[in-house]
Image 1 (cartoon, rainbow, N blue to C red):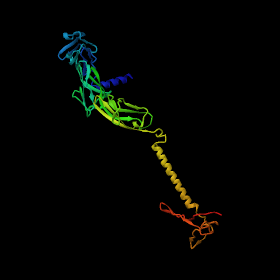
Image 2 (cartoon, rainbow, N blue to C red; image 1 turned 120 degrees about the vertical axis):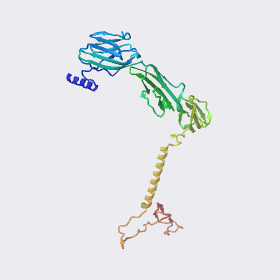
Image 3 (cartoon, rainbow, N blue to C red; image 1 turned 90 degrees about the horizontal axis):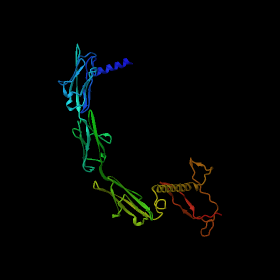
Image 4 (tube, rainbow, N blue to C red; image 1 turned 90 degrees about the vertical axis):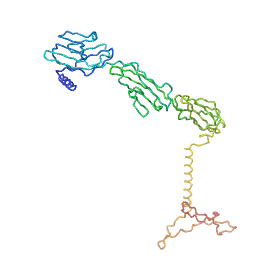
Length: 406
């Protein structure tokens, strides 16, 4: 297991460009003003060093000869220390002047090794502040946000409602990303904006909440369109608006004096039938929008369920019932007309020349016909017109006008 771990470590060192037996330092070090930094070799030869020297450019920061450490420059006294075992240099109480290249030289009796690294010192970012529009933001106008802070600012990041804010058709960033211009502003641009300013060693952020005023839009009135006399009715008006709008009601063009979102009428009379109009007003956008609602007052019991107006479903049910009734009556008429008066065929009726003989005359019982008081007089007949249904003729023939059974 230990051998496998060593193999992995050596592989990583090779990928990083580190060769065993060489002196290697990190490419770059970052530090904050007033903070500390340690320059520690990634790799160094296992040997006995007679002289160890750290330089800042051409200036000797600290030096060790045969284990004896010296700090030649007074500006580094009390600020630096050297670990002669790991060759690491610690530099404290950093200043912007400490930014630059640092070189390590390690000499043995037989060889000399050298490596260098770069230090970048940053001033901590602090006091981040977002400056937004000075006045109220109204939909359709423009809005600008800018972010600033003290310290060394390397990157600027904008978020809106915890999502990264990216450029779009109406969102434009400045070249340094420190300002955002939104034009034209929509209600969707309302929300919490966060700006984060940072550098490799510190960061700070600020939050700005922007409210976009809009509307009123989509004004609508909810309430019944019919009410019984002496009943009560309430109409409710609503609108999409920021801030919330004020309301005014009129009835048939006359101001009612009601300035709330609801209008209630108790003990209605027929004079309350008419058109009710709600007007919504936004005192920030200086805009207003109206909606109207018609109300009909009916006599008591004349609403749906009271014998008055029927619903569409009830009307449809009645129509279907009537149609079914008509169809049934028509079917019965056709049936009795076609079959009820037809004489029964005789099984003894023959066929002549391959053709079926016609129906025999109906057999009547002996009857008395009342016509001028004479018995057995030729009966009077009423000629019934043929009934047609889709051009199919049913001949009902002639029937006695008056028939009396003996």
